[in-house]
Image (cartoon, rainbow, N blue to C red; front, side, top):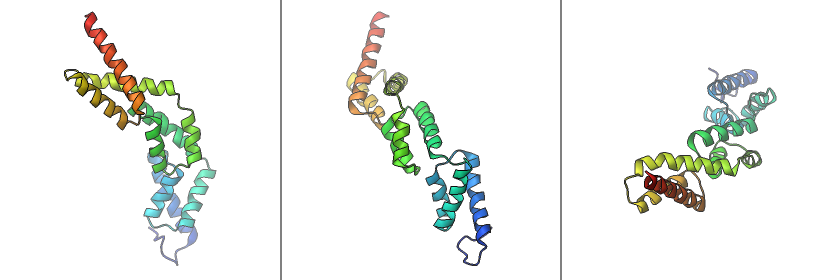
Length: 172
């Protein structure tokens, strides 16, 4: 392996080595531009070489932060039920530009986000069902808060689900 910090190393060979590392990362899953730059920096590649490598990959369509962000939001929002605020923080940590994050999160439907909160509470209700209602409210709203939901949304969703469960119990 080529030492990227060696001043005598062939610059083309250093770029090829950096590209190999970036391609290995991309083979596992889609990555953001920031993630690839960080990976190359951790491997001691000079910043200018890292930018050349990532710019090449971007021009070839292998790196696209908007595509990455849309996939991330879709997967994490669906699988984990995360709200926009948490998705924003995650994308920021991944090095996605704020304007790209704004564009992608603007497409998140607030009604679908609220439905996801309802599904999360419905699932969690099974494990807190035998507890006092105040404990249920506290645990369920805390769970939604950790997922990034605003306090008012969390309380509204929890109250609606507890009321629906209470009605279901009474009708049986």
